[in-house]
Length: 310
Image: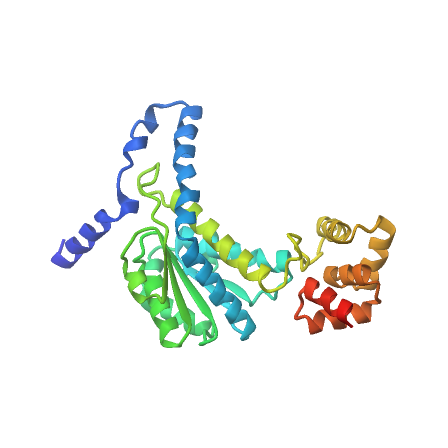
């Protein structure tokens, strides 16, 4: 092993995520229930870890809201588990909030084949990370969140550097402190939750923190973009039977209307939940409801307030 490789191994060995967890050293000697109790004890540390950095997560969400208003997008970039978690969060935005699939995107080292199968060595190329940023047309209006438990994955570092060169706002989400990713980023989200129950298995606590944080970012950004009324997801896409039922249930909860009125409004509104809600609460037709929503930038409450002031 040459000196550079030895130095790199020493750095990796010092990472919090690469330490042995003293609390779970007896794991291999236990029955199923006791294994799960120990793992669950570790998992309970995750929420507190995330809560401690909510001010930074909120700042990231504010950037995303601003990006959406300026016509920008949100990108997640990661390798392995981190890349898959980014793709999962991105893929759930269109059905939940009725967004265009291009608005929130996940980029993973090795391409979409890596979502299912390991792509050996894909995470080791900073050049490929940079090239994938170019391939997605990242621009100054966008926000790019690099995700890596270690905070030093070359693919993610290359992507973050290139995104920053292009003027995008760049965020580091990692599970170690003072990492190369944090040095590049405009904003760092350091969720240092400690050693894993299984040594080095960062799909566990580290992955859970990442999932929670991405949920917080997109959920908050879409609430602040008018896609939620109260706590109802009024911009969902009713693309299957279950979601049609949910859409009608949301209209009923928002308005207190009976089934017949809900069904009629839903169809008259072109199956658009927000329009149906404004129709029923403001007692207006579909065209007027749509016009109010357009004036209100898609916010249901603002649309209702505009109608009352008219």
